Length: 261
Image (tube, rainbow, N blue to C red):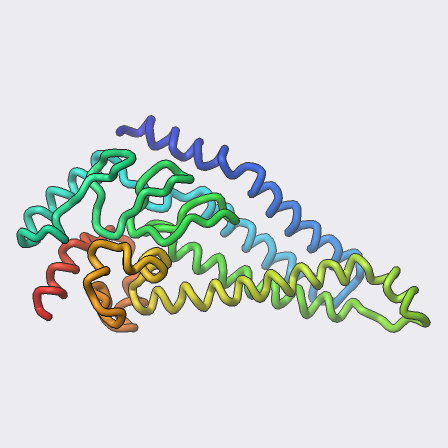
């Protein structure tokens, strides 16, 4: 699979999420426009900058290659793993039953994207893309900025409410602002929970797929719930997650940690 196939893969990812990305953009800027039109807090310029940053990060994580397993990289990593790990039925490479490529450890085939993804976390319908080894840290950064944006928007929306003579008149004056505040409140809760979960998973060097489907994952199902062969301590896990950009040979890490037990 060459450069042409990679380009086609990117185009496919872009086309499949066109309406989702358009909906996200329209919703984001509609709420921002409502906040500006209601002449809310005087620091509205800050929310504008945060919205721009969050939208840029959204498109970055949405359009990035999450770590698709390509033919050349799969074969190279498979050969490297074969040379560095002991003979074991668990750590030996396997082939994907869908795309028939050598599948590295912690990779999983995504039916929505049609490709295997290295260190697969989950397929996110909101970004219409997988979250994997290459874009997971950007996804967490996006969630952080998005949460800050939503909390700031909540503050600005609350500052826009003003007393009116009657409840009926108050509702008519603030109906759009009330709707925007409701949407922002719901999304704030969702993003807060997501960010907390992904920070926890990063600190434990685990993924959503491994955490939720542990009993079905071949290299984890025979271990106790407390065992994680990839865990190197909170500090090292977070350092590797946020600061190490090279691809990991997880078969080597697995073999090293399980052989010492």
